[in-house]
Image 1 (spheres, rainbow, N blue to C red):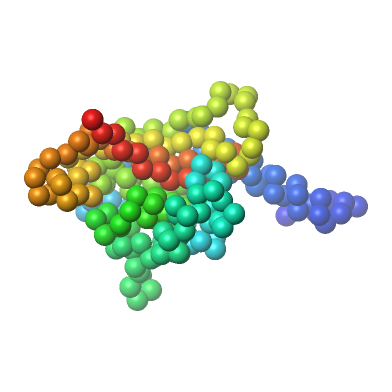
Image 2 (spheres, rainbow, N blue to C red; image 1 turned 180 degrees about the vertical axis):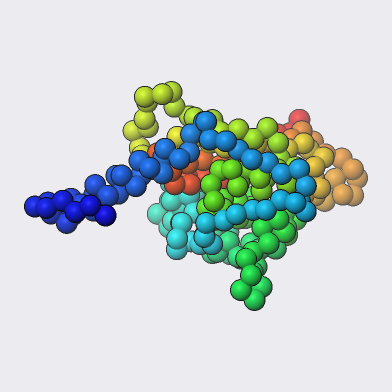
Length: 217
């Protein structure tokens, strides 16, 4: 690290944070190449770390969800239930091994809030958008694309707001295989037309949200 003399330590820390944020933001853009996997057996997923509520507090729409948040009641139980990525179904590491990322059990996750928290934990753990894209593609998600939310040169007034998203979609039949519901299981009836997962990042390159979208007739 290069030291600048005569500057207060607080200023140096502030500048370091700005430089780190700029570098992280530059790593995620609409031109970032996304990889996909055709087969689960041959797909290797790389991760950066094992995310938890302590390392990356759950965020929705860029905002950290805590006791002071309007949406705390919606996500409280899910956040408490899935404090770490290893708490999510199928991702428990055994005897010091890495989590089996492709063994995530979509069926065992309860509510939509539960799913969003687990998706956030997984996305925060994996090594960038390309690895997230590979992970999603294994489960049948397609049309994976990074899209900016602001025109070039424009910035959000709140630096916590998402500035770029990774969008994806999945066919209704495939999504019902991942997360079957009782009515479809018993009667073969479904109003579901499709679904999708949307990951978002803020200007600093930090994960700002992981949402599931559902389209019905």
